[in-house]
Structure formats: structure tokens, C-alpha cells
Length: 190
Ligand code: GRF
Image (cartoon, rainbow, N blue to C red):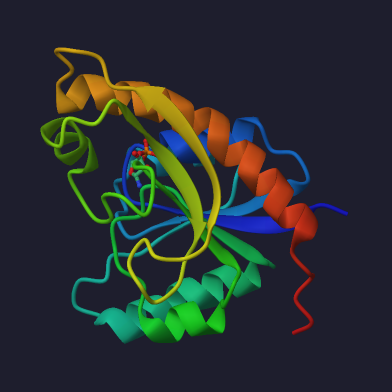
């Protein structure tokens, strides 16, 4: 039986779209965002997918996360996929979903955790860049790597040009790795 996943986004949601369009072994039960005007939310709605939007402004992190958590559980979500979700999840939230949150990061982890990955790879003179899907733990971009894809860094690449090349690789990698992950992950007994 298909597993139910929830996708958290903050922006355009192109990885979320790739996960929806190439869903295999999972159903996207909810797309949620900390940005009510995230373009990806409108796209998900237009595809008939349940959405939930809540800004943390004025609520505080704990209250905000409690409501996201409740929305995910109400939707029957078993596994969370972060897709351009630009907020750090609290240790509490990560603990509640231990081993059941994955993320896509635009670098070949463990290199270039955090932001500005493409500029940093170019500045270092790297010949290859890429992306990683990893398990989310309390350590930023630090959980077990589930899969990676490499792309070349070409002479004259700007961070924007490289980002576009890596993004295309992300769209191919994430659905493939999530399919494997949901097939291997044990159903939640709770
Ligand atoms: C992607 O590069 C992803 O790796 C990073 O944030 C970006 C999100 O893009 N975490 P999108 O919203 O999926 O288009």
C-alpha cells in the first residue's frame, strides 16, 4: 500500500512538483508551507492536493510547529519530505518524527552544508557539484545521506547557471530516492 507523505515548502516548490508528478509508492497527502503566498501552494491546490499554510509570525516557533504537526497528522502523513523549506525544525519536532523526515540539499554532502552552496563550490574550484537527499536530524544537513547526483561545474559557471544544472538533477534524484525510502521505511506503529 502506498505510504502517505507530507511535503513542506517555502517557495516555488519545483522539487515538490517533481515529487507529485513522479510519485511512485507514495501519495502526497498534504503540502504545507510557512509562507501562505508560496507559489508552490497554488500549484498544489490546482492539482487537487490538500494544502496547509501558516506563518509563524506572532505565534512563536513552538505554537507554529504544533499546528504544522497537527495538520500533518490529521492528513495521515507518515513521512515528511522537505522541499525548499527554509526554516530550521526544532529538536522537538525532529524527535517526534525521528527518522521519518527527509530533505534535499543542493550540494554533495558532507560538503557545503547550509546556504550559498553553489557559490562556495565554484569559489573552491571544484570540478563537480550536485545534490543530496538525506535524513533530517538535529544537526543541520547532517543526517544519513540516502542518495546523491553529480553534475559538472563548467568554466564560466555563475552560481545561477550552476544552480539550474543542479536543480534539474534534484528533480530526477528526489522522487527516485523517496520511492526507495518509503519502500524500506517501517510503517509508523503510532
Ligand atoms: C532547492 O535547490 C533545494 O535543494 C533547496 O532549496 C531549493 C528549493 O527549490 N533546499 P524548489 O522550491 O524546490 O524549487
